Length: 410
Image 1 (cartoon, one colour):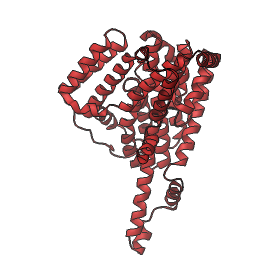
Image 2 (cartoon, helix red, strand yellow):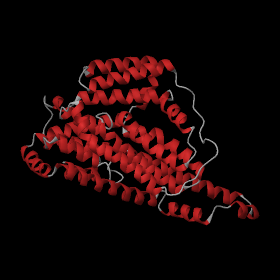
Image 3 (spheres, one colour):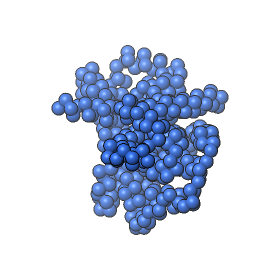
Image 4 (spheres, one colour):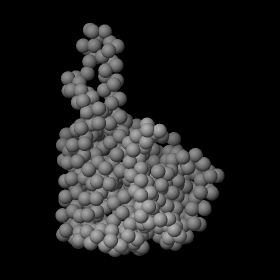
């Protein structure tokens, strides 16, 4: 039991913490009929349906095929980096930042490893992560916090897009500049490094695309969320019921816990008044700082109970996705892939050195820099200290620039 709790704390810290806080709040405000009003069923339904449809599209190889086709004509390392960063930026607007990174990061590692430049690969992955987080802020479905805030503050779709467009546009320019600044030299290969994957099944592709449009209609308040959920669930059950396994149910449960916590805190007048006065003094700064500690999705949900300034809060939690590694939980996806790559490569090098004879070992041994690199990874228990340092520096710089822009644009 203790091992189970430790594993949950390690992998789903936000879920566990939010659950504990929600339970504690139930002792302050005892469960009653108002509890059901805490839950925003529309947000949960849209989030569930979008994850379901996107996972179905992933399962038929839609994004692998599109990415493979585009990569066939690229042979330069710098252009590859720019391609992955740009694709992450635009994909995240429709697929969410975490789905985008889960899809693209393994492919980027495979493709860029062909150039044998670890530092360049690391920089590309970091910029890709920033691009996914920043690109996702343009649309209500780009990330969970946007979907929640869009519904909570009853934004109109056009108004939301106009509000976020300046920051989104500036972000695209910034991440593109990062690629060129951090990739001053270039390498090329004679042949394409990927083969084009099989074409997705046309009928399923059409069906899932229509379902995605149905979800967008609900986000735009043109279709009731209950009808949308019934349509999406029924069709996926018939077409590919295994897609249900790809839904992030822990995220949905985390939302429920936060709904309960926020609802109860809002009914304690003293707590509500104090927190409201703090948040309203500078909503953007409060949102940015809170995101660095508890991540931007929980920050958005928690702070929304104490401010009516939806515009400032939305901008704040989206900019707050930059900074520390946990500021956006999507950033952890890339980090885990990179840390695993580091461990696997060093383990492979160690096995080679142990199994080869001494003369052969001299001929095939890894370079001294690789040895030092592996020693550093071992020393830090495979956690990639250089990645964390580079990630933080790049993200903080981007955050400062965009916040200054906010002070100017308002």
